[in-house]
Image (cartoon, rainbow, N blue to C red; front, top):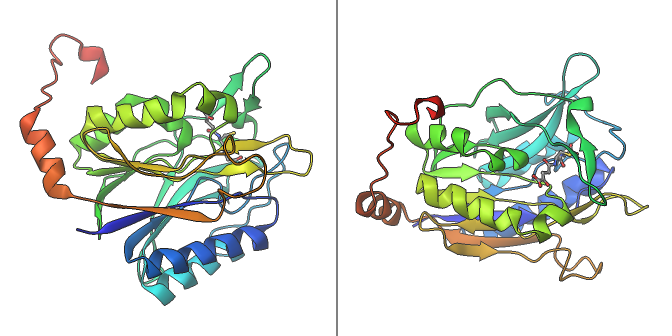
Length: 282
Ligand SMILES: O=C(O)CNC(=O)[C@H](CS)NC(=O)CCC(=O)C(=O)O
């Protein structure tokens, strides 16, 4: 059974620092025998105050550097990065880099995180990020058929169900989840719900810890892999149990992707939708 690795990092505004964190994880994932490595949303950099630093994927030192690592270790990598878009905006993108170092998939985040929570995060991602327009067909990888999603997308069952219907066995949610919503349980509950309702593996690599010097932007961590029965089969720590010491960054966790188990769950509990009763949710 192939092993999947989730990597957890703390991206800053320094692309060189972020690339070097990721490079170490590629090597560790390879040494551990993983057949694919999943890295978080915005691994290239975390912008403070919407201050974006991105270059095109073809010219990004971060992406070129990871492509070299993928090829060197013959290890496919899923990673969240930014790309330039129209009107001074950026795209929030999830890339699949195959074991030859080629970019074979580019998914653009569909749902943007625009929230105004009292005493909580006030973020308006749509100020600086362009919305994606489509989900991509699931594609074959050494760990199974992968459907790409990003972070806040995990609050929406519809694209997850659509990806499952199109053949996905693994859903990926590279993320930079906020601490208040993580502490409220949303991260774990939503990831497990997506796994249970789609009867798929969910692989969620997360940012962790404080991203800027002023401590304004921090991420929850708790990267995890969930199996099609809803069980967490790999998990990393969070900024809550780390007490600012950075113990949980630069870590990987591993889990076996058992597609026979997936087929068993799908066989034992058939989920036949009553689309005749709720046609608006199709
Ligand atoms: O800065 C970047 O470019 C990276 N993007 C993010 O961090 C995005 C938008 S601010 N974060 C989320 O979607 C968090 C969702 C979340 O925390 C929830 O749904 O509760």
